[in-house]
Length: 210
Ligand code: ZN
Image (cartoon, rainbow, N blue to C red; front, top):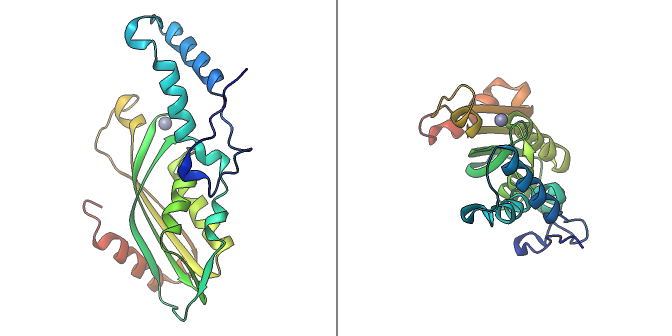
């Protein structure tokens, strides 16, 4: 009988329990196989609980696969505010889909409302759901921008993400300390240079080292 994890209390809002199913046993077996394959002894004391810990970690860090980010955007407020809304320094952590190594950093999101806004806490929720999946930073940046563009009544969306990638520090080129920056501009932010410059100065204004 396989055990499935479906008990993350924070996620009930966006994760119908029937669809939030992670096969922990399968991960445990796979991790044990990896340990044997690299020449380790999975039965030595320090590694005994490692397959289980890794299985639970994967269930947590990939929980966004079983969540629909759109539920966070369902509730909107009518507001006579047509200036740019910016949410800066949203911490995120994700896993690169090429090596399953973590990358993390800050996301900055801005949008130009067309009569309706969403609660400010909803933007970080979107970033969280989409980053809790195997990802690449470019794709994550575009997914956030496209989702907001499609789901909200907006004139434009701008997303800038900064990330440091374990892939670059523990393997391959081994260049610790590099920050990778990606951006996605949609609607007015893409079409209008002045609007784009305004959002970039807002985002970079308080973001040290960028
Ligand atoms: Zn990678």
